[in-house]
Image (cartoon, rainbow, N blue to C red):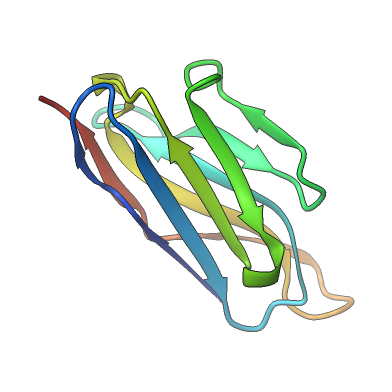
Length: 120
């Protein structure tokens, strides 16, 4: 199983970016999917997650600005980031709670990270 994140880049304050993360490989079912981020010198933090049923939760720092969504048919999770601020600068990682084979245990997988830089 691999998670491939993309969509990061350099954007000015107030701008927008859309991150994508595709899960591939032997997957029976994906439960929750999430985005985390790690800024320089800081611990990794949860940004947002979405359940298989579409329920979402956000960190207070991004509420009203970021939107997480998913395409279950494509095993893909998105993070629409609007009104970006310099403090949103970080490496963004996707994660998935999934079951690889029917009857097996749930496992957590992480993507490789994509850098988002918000600067003028």
